[in-house]
Image (cartoon, rainbow, N blue to C red):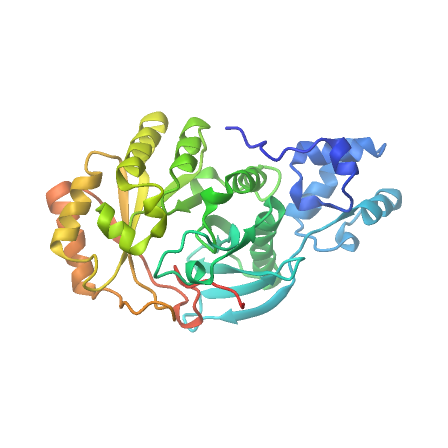
Length: 362
């Protein structure tokens, strides 16, 4: 897998100080430290302080020689994102962080706790250009792309929050299901993925990272052709082109037939299943006919269907499907088409931290 789309030479790095250390891969950090005339041993120590020690300041780098620390303080920075606000859900398992970017924009990141593990739901953009009608991020519009270091910083923030609170859980999963369309920001997202996967850092497993898309066809094909090791989730939300257009304006650019061709290409190239997602909206896409259409559409592909009852947002008047409609949808998929499915456990709805609820102040 090629993760070097934003790869920067040391010469370029030296021209753009202060260098955000979260922007560097481990080999790049080593090259930078060596260009300063220091031993690569110090680069390894810095890397461990960043991702194992979860240091937020250079003062938290124990055992680093003064001359190395002085150079870091002069030419580099640790791009932690200040917390503008944080809220804890009444469920006791979900915490949402409003993080402020250097230019004043804000993004939301969510920590979800489960038995023995924790998941970070990270954003890939400030806002989103896809315009899904039921999504709070789509309703706020597109602001800008996030850099790879801003993405990495979110995961580190969640790992640090777990550590500071003495939570025995460790960050094990990262899902790109926060604000923004990850495949609309492909290069930065995949560069961040490479940093998160580094076994000497956070050491996340590719099996524990999921990239979710509303159907950006070129990005899906790139993931297949570049053998991207992480999971792919495709938000269908409807099984017909007409139904998708009513919910996802981007379906006009990437019609359903093109999207499914890309999904078949992905499965053929990688031999890996796709998670197909469907936000269930009462009376809109949750009837027996909708379930049969979904089954016919994806039957034959290695697939898992995630059914997500609609989460409320101010800009959309739909209501979530009733539990009996969701169970009926599941039965049809299983009995008639042999497709496994799950109904997404709802987390953080009371603090607008659920799927489709993330946004930031105007």
